Length: 94
Image (cartoon, rainbow, N blue to C red; front, side, top):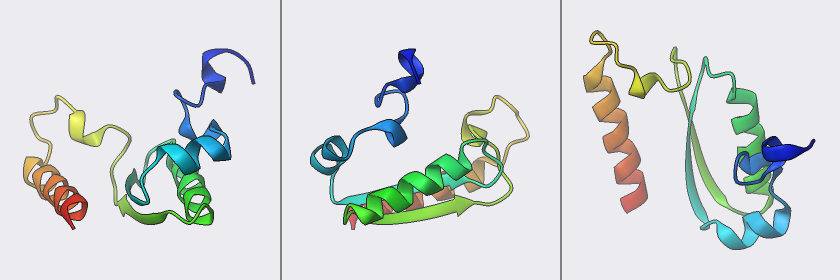
């Protein structure tokens, strides 16, 4: 792969092991979306981090696509979005 798409900064899944081991914290939360075109990549990245002995807490948000929480849709479920953001924040605090 060549160009910007091969950059570990554009796609962390492409980062070399030494970069992930040293640059990332030991405790990591990953929030993945069930209908996201990047779900498989996110799951593979989560597994890779676990093999690097990172403590990964991975969650899949059911029935939502990529960027679901950023939609300008006035009918989106803002309460659900707020609840998940709160859960993520609590996870960072723990």
